[in-house]
Length: 488
Image (cartoon, rainbow, N blue to C red; front, top):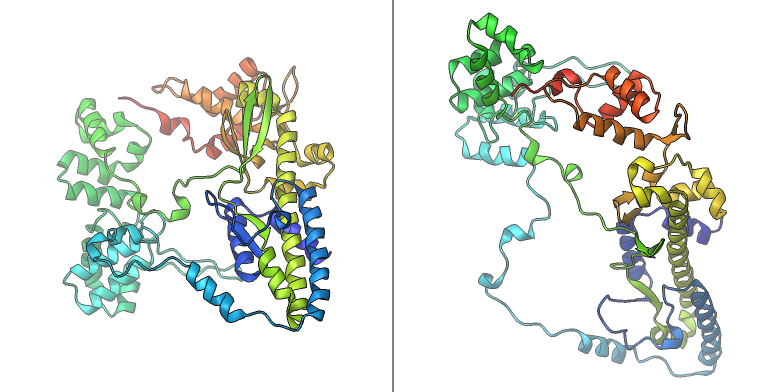
């Protein structure tokens, strides 16, 4: 493959943010390229004949040929010319164009320091800050650092062994092992760990759910009944087997209900507000918009934020007057032309694939997810005359804003589930059907997976195995029936 083709393929699989970064890198590395900032007038250094708009590949090609022709013309002129470019004057003019400095400002005029933070504090940072405020000895501090370093993404202390490259596992650790490594007496380890567990958030560094809830219950002043349920009846509590708890503790069922209500207020995941940025909900800018116009759906590409590239004709003309720079300028000019064409081709391909998806999934856009049809990459590839690998690249990390919501292009590709007496249905539609059934169930008597299987077959004509329902339910992050039961 030619370098230009490799570049086109690479650009095709980039997400929108990655494309914006790639354009910025090319602008930094290629002086021939120039960009028109959004909301600003075009640069005065760009003449209209030399402008390569991002809206038309044909126009880009024609202007690109004009630029190369102009380049050849300037090469001839440069050979005849004897005078050199006045680079000092050029740089002086550039300096004069820069915005004047406003001078030093008072710190009172600046935004708060917190607004300049590049990322939120992690749980480890939050705990280390509290550790610095504590009067721990040096050995206790080293032990606390080891504890903080072994927290998992939920905020629990994870001392399990890790898998080696050869498939074997390292032995599990204990807090006594951490104490020995830190130079702390093993008898002091539980006390220091208890102090850490009472840091904010309370319950952090617990070794399991029961310990996490107990630490919080003690810190928040829960009564003896609630503490006894946590200490002796965690299994029954998880299964909502309140009758067994009442019989064993010789208390009324109402008392168990009230205790369970209070226990439910405790945090089972101490690190919930300190998750990594990758786990947070982030805003997504769609690559295309789908707009309903009468009976038709129209695809409009979203070019906001993506800088429109042009050939800086004025700078190119100046550089071409220098015979020593002609080879350099020629290479940069070709790279710029290929980049502009590749970006335009990427835009056209995304729109073309999106239009094919709309054509094949029209019922989805009209009626919703229940009407999503089974579709594979080959279906779209044959419709648009492209290879399946190209369709895969186009649909990865590309998003479509529709009247039904925001979806990744890959969302529309689903395996098929056979119906009893109807056409096949997409697996995503089956997931949504399962979710709807569970949402409408009696919460005091939740449906088992087998009961859901029967409802799907009787009401929707969908025949699937119980294990498939369980798999889809887990993918939807829905608990089993025994854990969905609500008694109050």
